[in-house]
Amino acid sequence: MNSTFLKENFILESPVAEKLYFDYAAKQPIIDYHSHLSPKVLAENENFENITALWLQGDHYKWRAMRAFGIEEEYITGSADDKDKFRKWAEVVPYTVRNPLFHWTHMELKNPFGITELLSPKTADKIYEQSSELLALESFKPQALLQHFNVEMQGTTDDPTDSLEYHQVLRKQNFKVKVLPSFRPDKVFAIHTGEQFRNYINRLASVSNVTINSFESLVAALKNRIDFFHSLGCVSSDHSFSSMPMAEQYSKQQVENILVEVLNGNDERAEEVSNSFAFYLLTELCCFYNEKDWVQQFHLGALRNANNHSVQKLGADTGFDSIGDENQAKQLSTFLNHLESKDQLAKTVIYNLNPAYNTVFAAMVGNFNAAGIKGKIQFGSAWWFLDQLDGMTKQINELSNLSLISTFIGMLTDSRSFVSYSRHEYFRRLICNLFAEDMNKGYIPNDVEFIGSLIEGIAYKNAHNYFNL
Image (cartoon, rainbow, N blue to C red; front, side, top):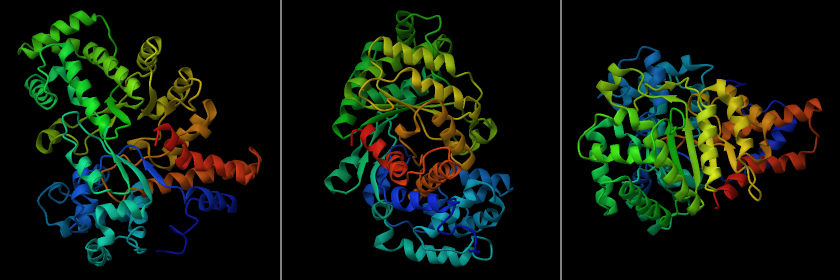
């Protein structure tokens, strides 16, 4: 690695920034409250066969970059040999400069592998062999990796029909890291998908032991699963919507009647009522979340499966999603106000995917706070397409300008990779540098101890308190 890239002062542009990072941020444990890590892989705790298995499988960021470089799909999601897939990724990496993948790739090679060479076709085979040797060690098993990165709590993303058997295995193993499920019921809102929806409802009925033949029984089945998740330590739910659902022109009784029609195989009115159905069902769920003192998370603004041709060949969630441009303010305000008027608004994190709405989201969180809870409504960290230096900076600045950055619950990985904790380091270095810039310019007091305490809160303590850990 050359003399200036990825050194100890990476992103830290002054001695003050270095002090804030090394004395206050770096030493804090990680609370990774939203990720897509596999609890099965974690519970079985088997060594990864090679760095391709650890790094490239399921990583949409890398897949998109490889497609942008013209790599054949065989080497991305296809049947090519793992080493050949890695070689193809190595071809792309030098050309990812100015993309966060260039930073993440080399941060993850450096920690935990201790590899400081730049990845390229010249170094690919050497790095593949060196990393594969390390991955065979006990210290590189999935559980050991979490402990290496000082993870205190790892949240996973789990469907209501999941048995959570691997979370139970981890409990019996007395694994030191808290691995907690998150309740993600996205599939239950897909009333417009015909047999797919009915098949899902049948699975939900089976695992909950509730016969689902009405709106009321559907809610009862979901309440059963919420109770089950809660018994295994769940502290949060998670939802993804293009924008928050609205009741529109349909009454709750009309929605209940059409749901029964759909359950009986009549999909004629399912599409037109889908938004209202989501509104009424989500309201019921949010009341349960509030009762359990869970945190509810809403990821808003994604345009899913944009390339229909590729999705038909490769399936959903294979790297063909994008940023949507739906209106957010009215829908979000209406839904939060609906819950507030019922005194049922739980702690809430809203994540924005369209940077045009950063100011809207930052302003929205100030409307629904409550006594006794610091930052009850959170403008969540820069998400997905925005979790790079520029996107994180904009999110941090908007939150600082319109609310209190001091109450912010900080970063998460939102990843399927067991070495993606570099994103926490990336975020921590950036926020320390931003505070240091203001200190050096005289915009805020040059009080390292006080600002350091705020940094500790943003990096760890605020999330620890917010999720009742």
